[in-house]
Image 1 (cartoon, rainbow, N blue to C red):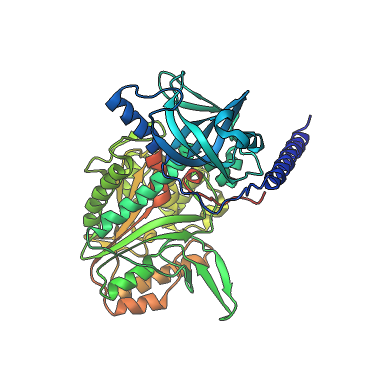
Image 2: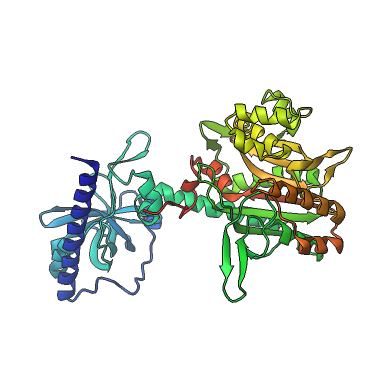
Length: 521
């Protein structure tokens, strides 16, 4: 049988199941049961109900009986994830965001309502109340005295067979929702059947909260800047374009927040940050999604050395807050955010780790070197010196930097918004932080000389004319803002998605974005 016929067969089976559930829906309504409730006043999350029972046992010993006498009354709600009928009794499991709990139904307790269980399916949302007890097999359960259908699921969830290792307690699911592509497309089903996926996004929320708390506590003000911009800037990337009908003008989805945040520094808001969605019109990969989240901050009177120390403190704090002190494990490595982080200049890293000397090489030498690492001759011809060095670094050095490592002092061509390095104006006061083989943070001593900034923009314009599609366009309004005077400033950007990948041990950026960009089905 071909793969196509298997797919068609599966689809037909799925539609037959949906039709069967729709028929049950009609039967429920004929019985006077409303299958889609307005609300349910459930009092106890599953984890709280279990905790209450365990604490009662610890205080009183086994003060319960199988009949559910002298026990704790609870009211719980969640999805029905298992059901097995045993004559005049039924066992089921209900799962909510905090865990899973067994339900015990008996015909003598439920009388006329008992046969409604025949019309319930896995995936239905159910509310139940009764008393807690422990079964002969030792499982904490609810002896149900009444139950209410809260929402009828018409499509079956891809629930698999679950086993728990008796020694380690590790949960294993077989024949469940294992198609990775389908899981990303149907995140609602992925979250419903895989608690560990929900855990990842709870960790993401804790990470963002910790970043925000760290900055707020140090006098930073959270702001919002435009997503739709008449000029894109703040990074070297291709933008998404759109059209504003009323104004009849082309607009760009922002690729970074930088130029607007620095306008605020000019305006006297000395410490600002934004946690924001950015958009870059680039390919998809394990580490790249066209829509991604970054935190950027700018602080007057700091330079890149100050920001490096600040970054060490920030990441140590966030890792501890998000994981509660647990170790960070990614790709078979334990990542240590112990201070201070390792440091190399860009040229040192290429020479000592990558095995190439670029400081004295000509552009022809660099083009030959990038061809050896897989860049086509045609692409290499359109690259300036900075882009050529960046390609070599990405191929020869970046994958080898597992523990947090600052790479500093980038060539001027690679950093059109950073101040020249004191003592060597061919370089800039810029660093990137590499962790687990990828860039995590990017920061500068921000350029605040408007004349120098104009020259850098004009240099970028020449690169664009030569065919480089990832350049910084000349922004006259930003230059005007700088001409009003910008104080010495340290700037910083960090990818939230990549940080969550590292903290959660997730191998793909799609694992930490609820709804990643996908090709059409």
